[in-house]
Length: 317
Image (cartoon, rainbow, N blue to C red):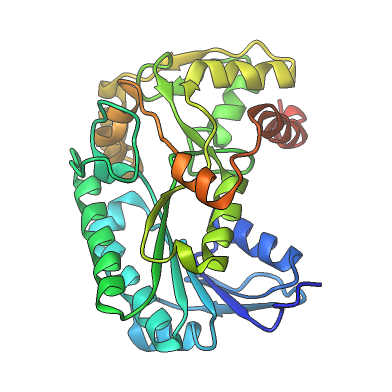
């Protein structure tokens, strides 16, 4: 049992990463409060639930009361970013400040725009999309709160997620349904361009590390990520683990735009396809050097993902 079990870790957002982070902290014997907009999940030892809108500052303060660390893992659907992204972040900052807790915020790489070199924490901020510009505002909001002394903040940035049970990922249900049906997987750009994918369990583990370490506060961190390889190469790794002949096909932008007429998510994804048009490489050296560990080896990540996919999709196929 963890001797720090009396501390309370409040996770805002119960999605792809927030749920994994909760599982990890609970396994370590920590107390966890999982906050979401929807209905509360099942009861478990050391786990509390809270349901509400974090953009409501009164609710945010109540939801984070007593926290030692607050983890902002919230990520609304793309088409709601202009409306929700900054208000919920302000709620997280408000709650953490009132609780005198550290804030660990999950972030992406959109603020860097089109890279011409591996992406490092000091890379130029040059967004080339509406969503990237919003992410710049979000980072500035968090870092300004840290600079003022309102709340201690650490920001953890990951690339596109890879792993099991990631419905809002390039490696989600649609990808596996297609390959188990003998079809090619889909890539939103060049499937042969090097692209960093961050293994979802590594994101949760790294966020927990940032929450433990005082020296993480006040900084941006690129989370542990395996060396970039092409989307096609990673898909073929999965295929070998599943005993399938897996290949990738490029999805034309015109098709994405056409689908976007009916599906808001598809409409919003078009401006992000630049990430697959050229090498998109994350450099995590600073995290590895500071905290002494890196990502799950790619062979292990692929094996774990393949085992999950086989149990879920092979029977249906």
